[in-house]
Image 1 (tube, rainbow, N blue to C red):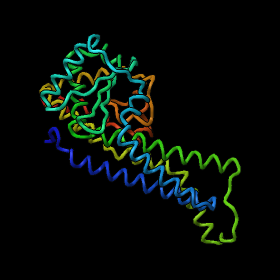
Image 2 (spheres, rainbow, N blue to C red):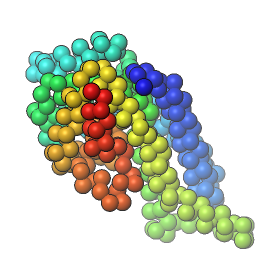
Image 3 (tube, rainbow, N blue to C red):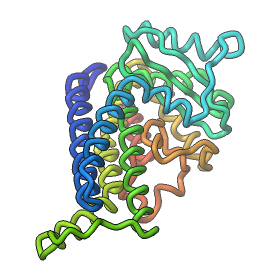
Image 4 (cartoon, one colour):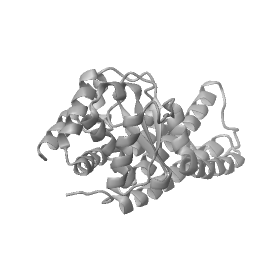
Length: 299
C-alpha cells in the first residue's frame, strides 16, 4: 500500500520530464512560426521565453496559483481551529508547517501548492471552513498535506504556468493568421514547403490541446493516493469520505474556478456538471463516488 513520501522520487523525475517536454513543444512551435514568417529571431525569442518560463514556473508557480484563486493569507486569531489542525497534522506527517491561505468562495474546496515541503502553502475556501466539522476538515487537510509529502505540489503547480504559456503563444499566432499575417514568399515553397506549412499550422493550432494532455498526465491516481495517505495520516478514513460527500452534494462551481488550476483542488472546482458526458474524458479527478467507496473500504 502506498504511504507518505512513496512517490517523491517519481514525481521529481516526472516534473523535470514535463518541463523538458514543454521546452521541446515551445521550440517546435517557435521553429515553425519563424519558418512561417521567415524570421529566425522568432525561434531565438521562443527559446529564451521557454527557458524563462521554466524558471518562473519553478520559483513562482505557487504565487501564480494562489493569485488565480484570489487566495489571501489566513489570520490565526480568526481561524484558530484551522491552524491547530494543520499544525497537528504537520507534526504527525513530519512536515514543516505550510503557509495557510483562505479563498473567499462559498464552494467547499482546497488545494496545496509550492515547490517543496519547505515552501508549501495550503489554501482552503471559506465555504469549506463553514461546512465541515473538525474530523472532515482534518481529512481534507491531511489529503493536502499528503500532496506536499509526496511532492505532488511541484508537479501540479509547474503545469499551471507551462500550459498557460503554450496556449498564449498558439493564440497569438492563430490571431495573426486570421488578421492577415503571412510568410514572406522566397521561392522555397514547393511541395515539401507546403507540407511543412500545413503540418506546422495544424501543430500550432493543436498545441493548446497537447498542453492540456500534458496537464492530464498529472495522473488521477495521484488524487487516489493522496486520499489513501490522508486517511492513514488521520487514521480515520470516514472524515475525508464524509467531507467528499459534502463537497459533491454542494455541486455548484467555485466563483474563482479556473481551467489552469482545476487539477490542484481536492475536487473539481467546476462542480458536478463538469464531470458528465464527454467531459468525463478530461476529468482531472477520479469520480467522487469511487473515492468515497475506496476510503470506506479501508475501515
